[in-house]
Image (cartoon, rainbow, N blue to C red; front, top):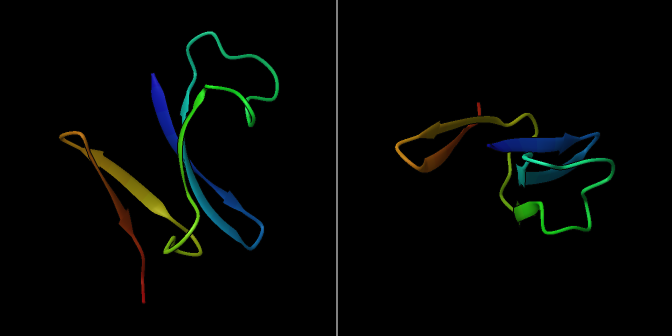
Length: 59
């Protein structure tokens, strides 16, 4: 199972994390599949459709 999440608190990162078997702090492990550090909306609303991740933001 994968999950996409944003970091919040003014830090505009978006991460994909593999949850199967994960425990504790996974931030520095191979459970983090990818990180997007630029161009992420302040309040991301990610939508995964047909293996493509869309991030919807109001401008």
